[in-house]
Length: 268
Image (cartoon, rainbow, N blue to C red; front, top):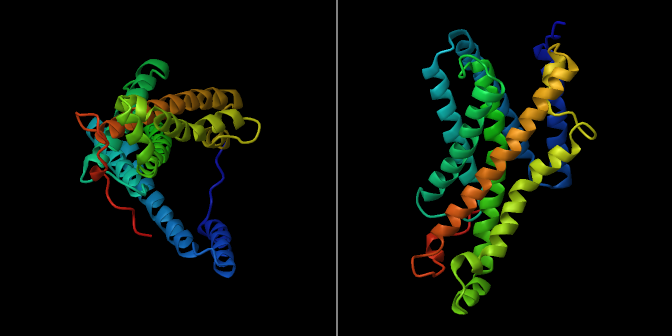
């Protein structure tokens, strides 16, 4: 089965729906019409560029090119996580924590899947490695961003309660335990909901793409189950790692809450 090719006219028709949404935002007064248009343009440019890069990458299959592409994806994901936070850690610490958390979770899970579960040879074959890593990084990025933003905001807003618990003799782990657990749940809820709704409410993207590409529905289902398990594990481990590292940064060696490490609230 051949994939039906889309023309520029087809994409233009789809773009009119986005413009219609932006117009509705303008008329209603939501104030996000500019973001809608800019995000649409940015997405189009980024995907077209990635398409050209992947075309070269798939034809070459070099480990060095795959590594450079993967590293670039990781660094951009780390930047996006930091950019989404209302309150951030001062300096570059927050960026390195977010990036490191995603590296430990996404890269390790992707490597395990490529070498053991999928068993592709060589394991860095770009047709498998780049899409799998991209899905892992994208979902881990969302989880880490949500949980990190919730943690720094809640620690700032509930600093009085945390400091009272510290004065009563609790350790920083005990004083911040409820907040940290809530933040971890927030970061994991999207992937848990996605797993619960997959196959009933929605057909996930990878499965849909494989079916449109002519793959057997059962083969597409098997790959989608694998990817959902990997995304859930990567997101969970990334969120847990990020929350622990950020929390540790907010307390000093004397078990005191150090809010000076937090930057001022992001300008709206």
